[in-house]
Image (cartoon, rainbow, N blue to C red; front, side):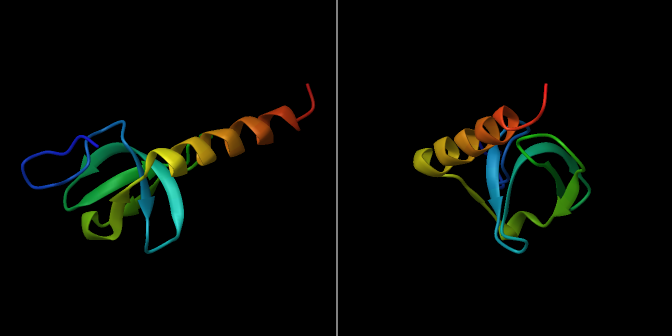
Length: 76
């Protein structure tokens, strides 16, 4: 995981928001918060940096497979 000097995840990193038990991608830093968006896209939410942790490779792969599976079930 790429972090800045304060240990805050970089824009583009996939993280787990432990306060909401959700996985998201860091879209921006807004004041004291991170703006996260679901990996499949959708509405952003704010998360405090202290409630966010990096995904393991296994967790990232699992989350990406879940996104791909969900897309494959959508009508064309």
